[in-house]
Length: 180
Image 1 (cartoon, helix red, strand yellow):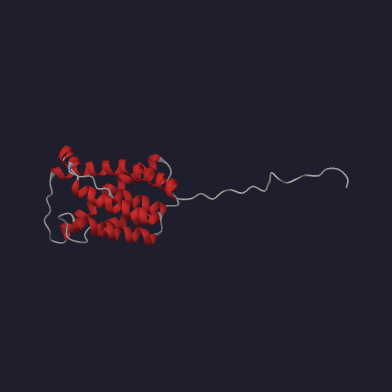
Image 2: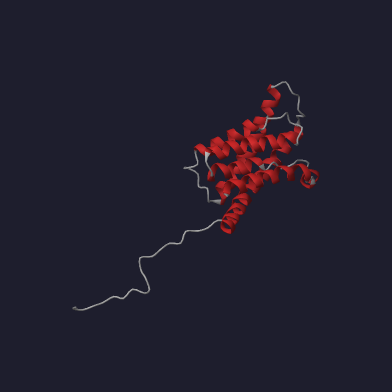
């Protein structure tokens, strides 16, 4: 259930980025939510889910943006793989760790994408405004990462089931004392 909800949220996040332009008009840059979702997936799912999310999320994002199809897949996968490899060392339940990982992932993924575009012979718009856009994307992703962790925790509580801890004590058991 967690994987299905993760892909559904990723699908909605990609279309939200494409349809909702309020942040873009207000700040001059659009917040990318995919690196934040990759951080969550890397810390809570397996490598197969991380890979599939990078492929699907990257292709969905590229199909609705001006990017060449597939250019976002590898940066998202690299971010997800880096977090996945060190997931045992990361304090995933700490707000500061979530914020920091979201900040780093949301800054690194666009930089790698920009490097791929520059080395492939494309000429993306690049200038001083790019630094502002990178800052907005990084801070937006840093804020979105703890929000996603909380959202998925609430969804897991709402749709998941908890195992009931069975006690060895039974209320209907009679304890006999003394001699037979």
